[in-house]
Image 1: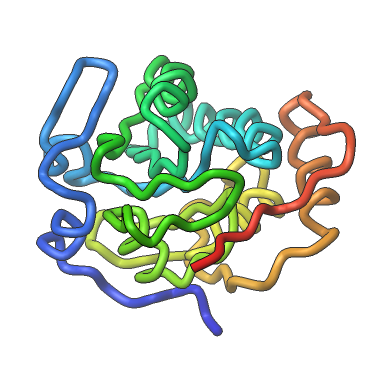
Image 2: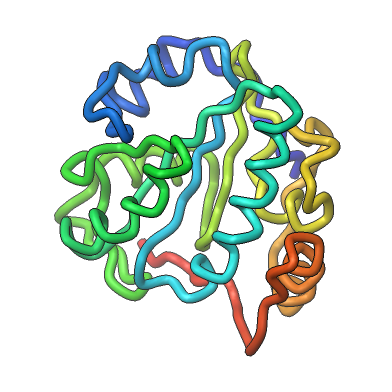
Length: 204
């Protein structure tokens, strides 16, 4: 299946994300954070080892986009198991100017096990975009067009983001190639990954 999920009206995007996001400056309206920008929805979690290995590669690519003068907003969509873990993990993202869905509006997971009693915004987003594993990235352009639902795979093939927002990227199941891609991206970022790593799947 192609990764281009079609246009999402701004009202639909705001409805999925909610009216408020958390930023380094405190709470801000979603429209203020994302309006006129390419928005990256970053699905990750403090407990996810593969996410932590991917983080430096993502940060490197993001810094390249900023240096190139591209207007990009990053919104962290948490699958952390509790508010403390969310706060700890997000602290490193705040410094980069990234935003996040408030924790109480997300769906908590613990080691990938879905808790159906706490379904919320994260569940709506992952189902909307057909996401099955962590880390995951969905890219939405300024017009509300979903350019890819496999930003992770695209980044591993384009570590510097030279072809961002990856309009022709197609989503493919990840396997052992995930580690190979991480290593390639890591070399470009001078942050080579070490040790085995695999994407973490969701249940439910």
